[in-house]
Image (cartoon, rainbow, N blue to C red; front, side, top):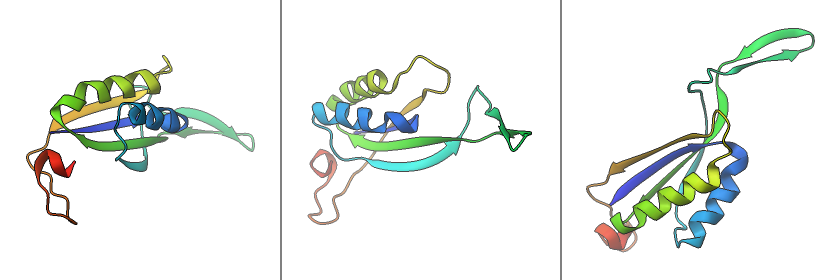
Length: 112
C-alpha cells in the first residue's frame, strides 16, 4: 500500500476529486493548508500599502491506495491539478506498512 500526499491549488480540488472518482478512488482526507515553494509568496497592495504574502493557501490531499492503484492515482492528480504555472504543487508517495479499518477490523488492502 502507498500513501499519496498532494498539495494543490484550491480551485483544482473538485477537478482532482472527480478524476480520482473516475478511476474508482473515493476515499481521501482534505485539509486547507498554507505554504510556499519556489515562488516564495507574492506582494499585494492593501489600502495603498504594499505587503508580502509569504504563505499561500493550498489544499492537501491524503489518500492510501493499493500498490496497483498508485500509478493511476498519481497520473489522475497530475493531469487534473496541472495548470502549467508556478505553484501547481507537489505529490509525495510513501509506503504504508499497515492499514486497519476500525469498524470491521479488516487489515491491509481490504481496509483501504
